[in-house]
Image (cartoon, rainbow, N blue to C red; front, side):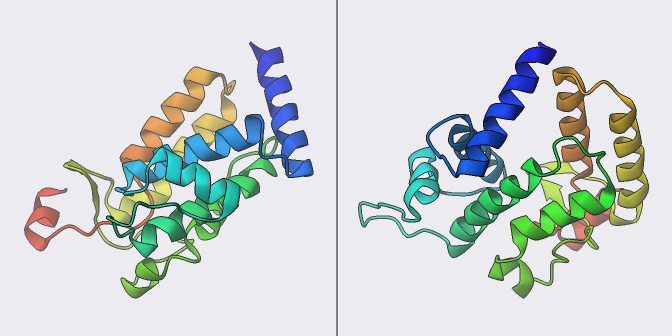
Length: 187
């Protein structure tokens, strides 16, 4: 398995270096961008995500209006993914994660308009669906604990999946706000 992962990383980095969007790099960009943004409520389909990545355009039947934020986040995701590829073999840090968030969100007007701290940990309670995430004041310590555990591990597929699950539970960056009554029950 380790040899397969090494070959996959090499293939992805080679394709990225050549800006070849037809192989593993392009497939991974599209599928990860679609699924990551779908979790956050994006209305773009997987086909529209692929079109945005491949051509920079979205083909529509004229019946549906797309939110600007969806397009801005999708293009930010493509940019952030390219940045992530540069960090494959480097230790993970809180500053690296914040840098990825900045790459992801720097062009999303709605986030700036809502006062969300782009490239910084959240400053208000939030939720993912009905799931209450970590309170803002606990995020730095929880992220440091998670990163330390991850960096000390083997980074096998199970380790990466556990990291992602815990990261989503913390949900360290700002998005949906909770109402004041919901925030009272959050913690």
